[in-house]
Image 1 (cartoon, rainbow, N blue to C red):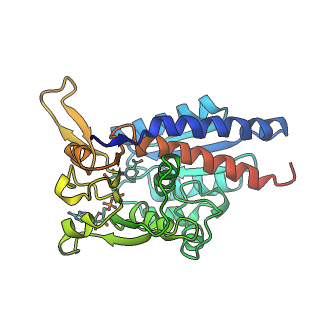
Image 2: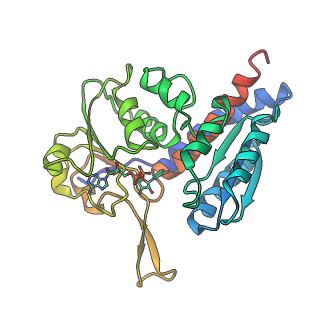
Image 3: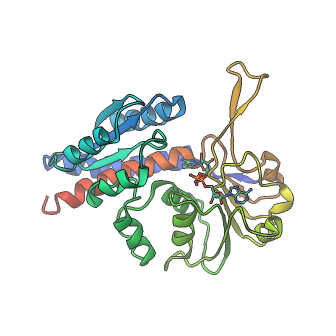
Length: 293
Ligand code: NAD
């Protein structure tokens, strides 16, 4: 039987419905959630991501400020924008779109964002809280998206074997921490580029989260029959057969659908849910900044 589709768009719609109510409460109290997005350079994919974040803000009634800077601008210009946004009382979330040009230090810029406005959840203070097992703050959006999708599908993680492919600061490691956190209670293995015998490790997983950025790396033989497979990867593949000349592919081969119990599509899986989690973080930051309202 083919895997059930773990539908990120449907799950994101459910999150947006909840957010509508919270945003209405805030706006009735005179607080409009407000997100600023800084983008540097002209990477087409990054502009597509930023535009869909801005469109989602508009749909939900979240105010957005879009700051687009040229690729050659100096890092100090971005720094100054962040400092100005930190000081702006009516602004609740700041996001610097990744990747930045090579001459900029992305981590140093993230460190500069006020932790209370760090809606990407990458500031050391927010990641540090997560390491301490405190999952009630601003959490990184893509790992939160994975967790919310699993919850939405009714997947009970307690005592289950989870394998996370990838150990990045923004996806793999925080996803592993969330899966292992109290309340989720999975037993987690992190697999990375130096891991030996990856296929066998992955085959032990009841829940497999792939975040490697390698097109269709995960094959059916890597997957335990009936496992829940979450494909975080977004890889652009040249494809002459298509009108536009390319397609998006995940880190999981589509034929895994014949082995897995659940599988997220790419596109339409973790991607839309990541944006939904960004919106939720922005609303949370707005609520936290006006606790008496
Ligand atoms: P990254 O390059 O920072 O990290 C990749 C990780 O995978 C590294 O830890 C590396 O050790 C590991 N890895 C690489 N090749 C491997 C291999 N052959 N075997 C085992 N491990 C291997 O990437 P990232 O930022 O974590 O993103 C991963 C993927 O997720 C990318 O395709 C990215 O586009 C996608 N992504 C999607 C969303 C979304 O919203 N859906 C958000 C962020 C990232």
